[in-house]
Amino acid sequence: MHLRRATIITVFVALLASFQLAGQSGSPPAELSGWTLTWHDEFDGSEIDSSKWEVLTLRDSYNQEKQYYLPAQAAVAGGMLRLTSTDEPFEGKLYRSARLEGRYEQVYGRFEIRARIPTTQGIWPALWLLPRSARWPLGGEIDIMEHKGSEPHTVSSAYHFTDKAGKHRYVTERYQAVDSSGQAIRWPDGFHVYAAEWEPKEIRFYVDGVEHFRTTSAEVPVSSTPMHVVLNTAVGGSFDGDPDASTIFPQVHLIDYVRVYQRK
Image (cartoon, rainbow, N blue to C red; front, top):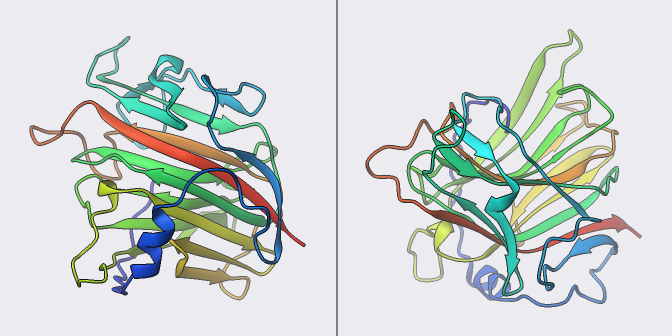
């Protein structure tokens, strides 16, 4: 979620199997081959589980963002976490939105989130990992998925780190795909599974089971600092610009589940 410029690499693949995957929900699997489930939330209750999540009250963020994060903008209903972004000014900010941070931290593993993302100009949903024990970007940052609302056919992933000179660097990839009929997928139109597999020598990024980006220790210093899950929708700022006349409010970011695994 920190400032970045995208490196455009577009990938088109047939995703019939991914559409089948994206239609699935419910309880966590009894087993994911090669992995052990360590932490999860299926959002099946009537409210956000405060033992698992901190719901932020945050006025100021990076990247010239225009939202005020408020707990009232987040709720659990119908087996989903709902992050609602509105164009209601509040204490000097033009928009209201929501940001949750997981209380559980883990080094390495598979981090998987099934979500339906919001969109239109200036809307910036993100699913990412961040450490508490290191000042940014010393401990790294893993952006599982980010979306520019002005580009409904595109999502992106990124990894942020500090180079040997102590400067902030990042690597990133954009991702597009087509469905089984050859039509470009509009990611906000349905649920998709976004995941990152973080290991000591590489980080791999997936959408609906398709690996679209990989970075290795030969290219970057892969973090060994424990991280937690962050779920949010920013509004405005340097990533996709600010909302305009084409932006639609309210926007709802739906999250079906968050699951964290470790290698067996």
